[in-house]
Amino acid sequence: MKTQKFKTNIACGNCLAKVTPVLNAESKINSWSVDLQSEDRILTVESDDITSDEVFKTVLKAGFIAKPE
Image (tube, rainbow, N blue to C red; front, side, top):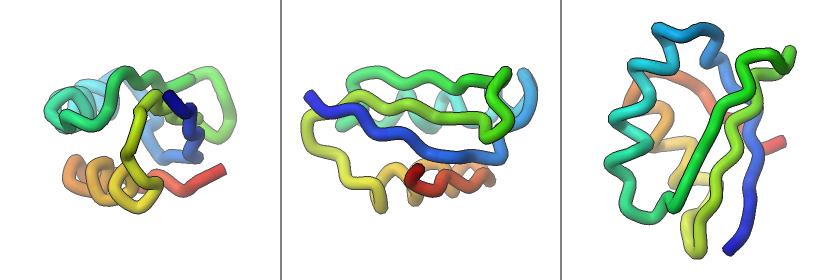
């Protein structure tokens, strides 16, 4: 399993509530978390085979941006 980190604009609990169902629905993601305390709001994704582009597109579906760190 590999860990990928992304800078995001997921800034608050409400943002997190919007992105949660979208990330949970992505079957390639084993687990994920967002550090809301970090200035860059780092999204950490654990997966065997998802690409950074797929993570970007998944987060974009919820209306947010995720750029590889």
